[in-house]
Length: 300
Image (tube, rainbow, N blue to C red):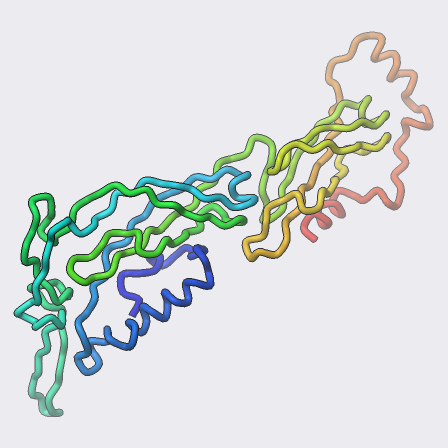
């Protein structure tokens, strides 16, 4: 069961999750239990073609809402005009059965047929453009639906878009490894996004509005007068759509007040006058959370 399939021990199959139950049970039970050659010598074995693997690079915008990508794939398909005949060695079963007499009785063992490689068929008529199995390489454009919320390293499966198998075999699958491009201003953490906003002291004191990036375009946010460096503004629902289909993450805007390193004499004189002034002395309120409290809130 599950021959030639899966992800080679890793990855996730996110291509139409529910439809995969059909793939799973179909491959496990062979469409009516006909592929269990070792249990009573059932019907003809259907060999599966080899899987193909490609990489697809996505932007954060692609990941946020899902995207459909068209990729060109070179895969093996049956050549036009190729015909096959039943393997005379195994009589089409794909397996060779050997019976051995032992002191415990007769023991039956089965091995893959050396003539047909387990397919139960041999090539009868091979076109000029076909290989020894009756296959040829062709380039095909494949459409891949990528759901929102995928992450770097995940692997999707496009059923039956790998190499075809000779004879009555079934095609392999196309395995798609996800890679992500780094965004210029946004950083991802799960379904949440982070944005570092730098503002001058004057804007922090007087208040202002700023335009920032999101995965759906730019938005303008309001900064209240007296906003402190380290303040985190949460824009709900402006993050990544959840992979399980329930809601979106948030966009966390980290406010950083930029302190100038070089000042003119007039500017220095101004701040000297403000030194020690009551309005310029720190007065943290109970509502002003500490750095560690803010970090805790980020992950809650």
